[in-house]
Image 1 (cartoon, protein in one colour):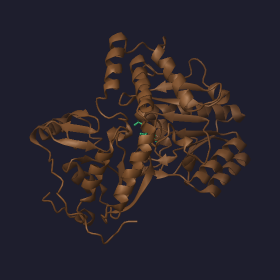
Image 2 (tube, helix red, strand yellow):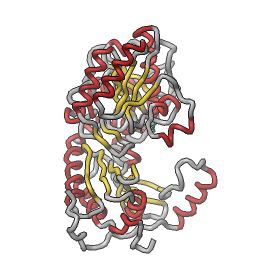
Image 3 (cartoon, protein in one colour):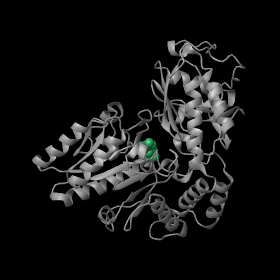
Image 4 (cartoon, helix red, strand yellow):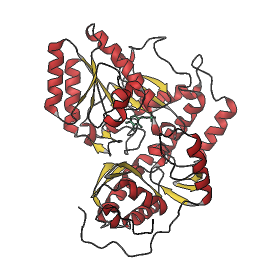
Length: 437
Ligand SMILES: *Cc1c(COP(=O)(O)O)cnc(C)c1O
């Protein structure tokens, strides 16, 4: 829908906020002591407020990435800060030999928000990959119960489920998976959205005696570039899993907790086709910036598989994280942030679709989990141009930008981000920078 020949608006150029000396010096120090897995940091940051963050040189950035879809309430939200200091003043950590009120209330709240049936359960961990490790262990137990064989766990092409060895085995991108072979056996990939392929996988499992224990999928493949699955396909996966007794595991690590304008993406029928999971994993946004993840099992079947001693976590569900998650969820509710995510997402997608910059081919997403498909593989250069001009976006693929701002973002901030991004020089798409960089 790009108006390819429309001129780029010639209003005031966005102000540049280049990397200053403080940020640069600290980034050099970072480089000398950190393992080289993330590359040089874009900036060294100092503090944030709402959807804004400042670097060490006092430059201000509008954060359209929110710490990779984590900072649901933005930076330094008063309710979050209050919960942090109150709970830290009481007790931060107690181990799972004990329980706390915030943890119990949080589990109750999550089951309620997920509309989980009687007999459903929650397990708390500290990250997305750990949440998926729990789901993998559960799937192993389920497979063994199905017929003496642990069975196979299937993921989709372009999936991302994490980087620990189990979830990495279900993460598709060869460049991040293959250096670590041998990986966990009994796992495989299905071509995403290929109905015949999954029919065949189940049929083969019947004849080989190695059942499909579980299928794991993301309703919007986030790390692949914010690619929503076809709801008809999702419904087909659900039906096949039900018919063959396999678990359907939804990885809602990125899509959960209001990000798509619903508490969970599966509650949006345009994504799930009405399918409900047997197991759901969550993390990223749940505690508004405190590391937390976990797993919800739906109904008594999957909920009874893990028994005492079979799994655990030292930190999982600790009172501090639980209090912050409770506050995050309460604030999303109180401030109407699901509705806001839907409205602001629409505004963002419409703004970028209509801005007339020929670099932007297509805009997609739900709520505030969105991406711009670029007409050239210049996402990295475009993201650093945007950073220099005061907007944080994420080059999620060589030819796609991900936009996942905090759910508290305001309409004028969306408009500002669109305005700045609309002015990205077309020369970026030709590998040329026109701004002297
Ligand atoms: C980010 C992500 C993970 C991994 O989460 P970590 O907290 O980085 O371990 C897993 N699955 C999905 C869908 C994600 O987006």
